Amino acid sequence: MDHAAEAQRTDLMTITRHVLNEQSRHPESRGDFTILLSHIVLGCKFVAAAVNKAGLAKLIGLAGETNVQGEEQKKLDVLSNEVFVKALVSSGRTCVLVSEENEEAIFVDPALRGKYCVCFDPLDGSSNIDCGVSIGTIFGIYMVKDKDNVTLEDVLQPGTNMLAAGYCMYGSSCTLVLSTGNGVNGFTLDPSLGEFILTHPNIKIPRKGKIYSVNEGNAKNWDGPTAKFVEKCKYPEDGSPPRSLRYIGSMVADVHRTLLYGGIFLYPADQKSPNGKLRVLYEVFPMSFLMEQAGGQAFTGKQRVCFSFPFSDPNPQLKNLDARAITFA
Image 1 (cartoon, rainbow, N blue to C red):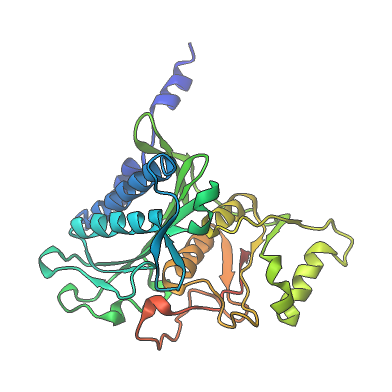
Image 2: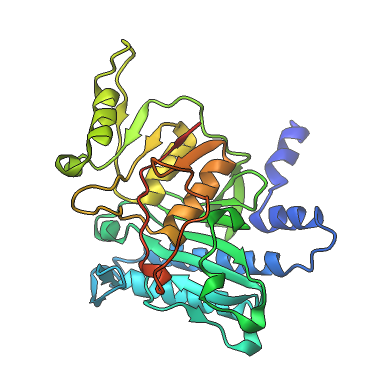
């Protein structure tokens, strides 16, 4: 028997163990951040279970309402939002929450407040729920200055202030990708153990990719530079092979593929949506944080995404950013 191989197979690095190892690198830590992440992980497990039995539990279909973006809410949208709001509030480590499904920021009761702000999209790509395509949860974590006097200003921080970000993709397997500012790691949920196991350590986006990902159905509304770039992807002028088009329509799945295989993901502004459609707080900033931590780039076509952004809208969850492209270095 290969005892070394057996030890390797049984010495599992769970996400809890990984986060505790990261905590040990900071002797001053009191464990608040670890507790917050454990509650996010619990929410991901709950939603993963709900997604897997959505058809049987009659969770497929519309809930009869629209969210703050004007999109029709699915039943799973509403359930996922409730799960994460309750998980984050009950952690006792958050003071303000921003969700795609809520019109206003949620300020936690003073008795349950902690020092963190969490911005999240509880179920990204929900238009794909009914046909079984991969969907996911996106989240970003900030620290506030004063938990007893928290305001919307604590929410409107640039992406460079983000402490951690991640997403959980619900598909053929349940994969949670996380960065706490020290690289990117991927964990896969083992249903038999009920634990996320480290399966993709230290993810680095390939420096060269063969894939471009964009919704070409909007091509007629693109500006000249965007159209020209996509044209070069299909018909390179330097004699190199053309890039392959892969577009799922679920940002979590498209970005996950880009992280692992390389390439470029674009959601350009156009005549129909001049400010773009990706939301800054709970889509663009978290994904940009992960992309940069994995050695890639994220920019708007004019500047790095995570630079300070001039928020002027009093309702931060309504704010859009011209997210020209997320790509690699």
